[in-house]
Image (cartoon, rainbow, N blue to C red; front, side, top):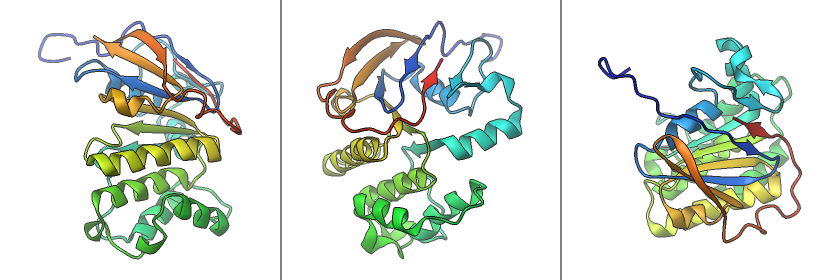
Length: 232
């Protein structure tokens, strides 16, 4: 509610995302794309309808169950990085694995591969204040991927970056989608950024109004190892 006026941010959306797919959701401010992002990630409970992740409906879960599902199955990348300022880059990555609740130890070979893929090997001992914006976002991506989530949700991941760093981060998201096999959904207002996706959805007034293939639609699905699907 906004005062006495009821506001419906998302309405009538029907969306299915296949395992290993890279989908971009594009729209102007106020179109409902960020609300859809929070619904897909289980950060906001839908007032009606269903959000199903790999066969599990968020509406059937209590708060604790939704939190556990998010920790184990979904990796989040945000525009503002949200790194802990008192921890090193490595500390920020490791703490994400710790709070995921996994009992098995962190796979150091996988972590090395992840950091090498994101070109942050030489920056792991540095705190966020000692890193560039592009480096902070790559650390944030590593933090999102360290638990090997089936689904990666990225909300305006290039919004605070210059063109050079934006291009680098987008290529990293595409590479992780291809090499690690995650299902990837990216929210953006930038049509050029959206073009790396295999599918582009356009939102306006809380609804998906059109859909098109990305200019690189064939690349993002090569040699994937499907992990999970999402549906609304």
